[in-house]
Length: 297
Image (tube, rainbow, N blue to C red; front, side, top):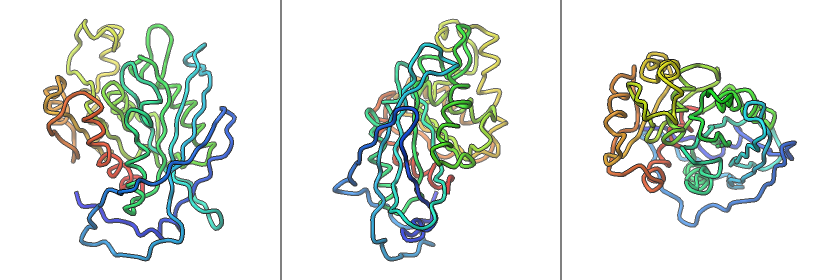
């Protein structure tokens, strides 16, 4: 899909962010723009405008907290956001929340995926400025479990409100994730627990159309599967912009195809050579961030 680009000077008028000191023990350090930005050809309606006096630069922050929904466990988080020059109006930036996969953590976003790098290239190309954030969810599959943990409620009731307290626009939220986190993103978007969700993207989502006892790490039994059946919930995504990608060499490719085929409305993304690994996910991430930025504008 062709996406019109916004001029840099207009971006500076529209968006801004100040990531201050956090009550959740935040620390911040700068990340310089890459030496060779990824070129993005302008769409037919794009208009070239003069470059701003100062570039948008991605900066990161991190911290931790103990969740009421994961008692006794320190939940760590990471965030990357464009920093604008001080002065003038500073509207709230939208934010895209990343859900990690099985045996992953918040660190996947900025370490394994190095998502701040394609985010910087997205900004350098004139894309909509937005933040990306991640939090530890454990191996909970991002829904309530029989052991009492509930990473989805932690995200909805604690982490996202925290992002709001830091100045991010909770009326413009994106969701994206890989594997288990792809499933979790689709589930959360389908359930409508975050009214501000404007787009959802899933990379190699771990989705199934029936319960299998071998999925015991994902569900606590047939009733738990039925309560969180993303296939049955597909009609609820009719009005939500969505993108789903999967590698053709991924063992999940067949069920991902079946899931995509039954989704209402347009579905971006698709299938290309690749497996269920970070090499594939890094290859599609720039397009995922472009999709999120366009829909969070």
